[in-house]
Image (tube, rainbow, N blue to C red; front, side):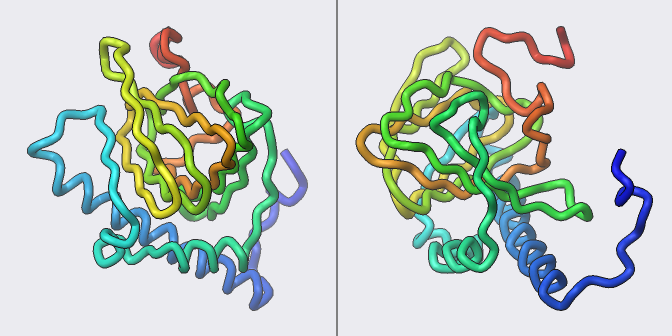
Length: 203
């Protein structure tokens, strides 16, 4: 435990307050979008499942645009750290608030990232916006059969907990904004599970 954990923040600079307001606003937009997707799909889609769309076509529903995400990332740059999910060619940074259980991550896959195994997130949902680059998004069904779809700038992926998936890049890098609801700490064994591994709460 650090010394700072014994203190309560009573005053922040105006810059810090603006940061927190902007982070809260964009997290709220992602939360509302995800809830809308969950509500509209609950009677016709069997989970785990994955949806793919276009940011431009969903802008009215999500209140999120490429421009707004790029402006947000430019105003509040995050420090990217690697490895991410045990892969050195992937780096990630996090926007989060202590008052919320969700978070937004920026993920950068280097060209020729082929070694992220198929895995699942069993304790949170994901909404992913592709900011730049292109990749193959690979998803596996309950029997292990896989299918691939190309993703590039402007694509949106929504996948529910338990969806088995991975990304693979070729000559282009891939830049993602990945919304986690709820956010599971990256060093928590529940954060992701490789196919074939036991659920950490059931092992």
